[in-house]
Image (cartoon, rainbow, N blue to C red):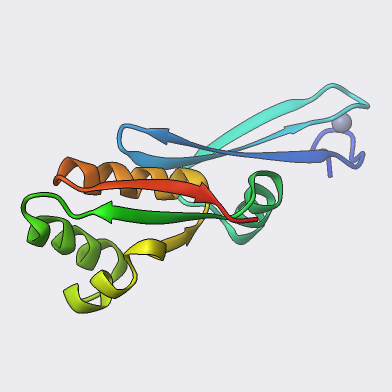
Amino acid sequence: MCPRCAAAIQVYHHVCRREGSVWWSESIRCDRCGMMQEADSDAGDPAARAAILAANGRWVLAVTDLGRVPIRVLRVIRDELGYRPAEARARLERLASGIRTELEVLLAKLVEEGATGECRRVE
Ligand SMILES: [Zn+2]
């Protein structure tokens, strides 16, 4: 609802990469009175996540190569996702799934440690 004139409004959710992390923002625009408002946050709420998934689909992160020093990549996977090395190795093809931007941020961290991988849309 518009805070100025109480008309029904559309809320737009955005997610992007900023300085190596995931950044969320929300904007509203009222067609009746023209009010516009934007808010940034570093955490997405469930409504924002659902909206982004609906708009951009669900993606998976696949690691195709652990690089020259696998333990460095496996350590990041453990820190970020909580998988022990054996678990991580067993699921490299589908390491994580969700919002593309979040997976790209994670992939960038793995690539920094020598891994090769990709984000693929699954639905
Ligand atoms: Zn309004």
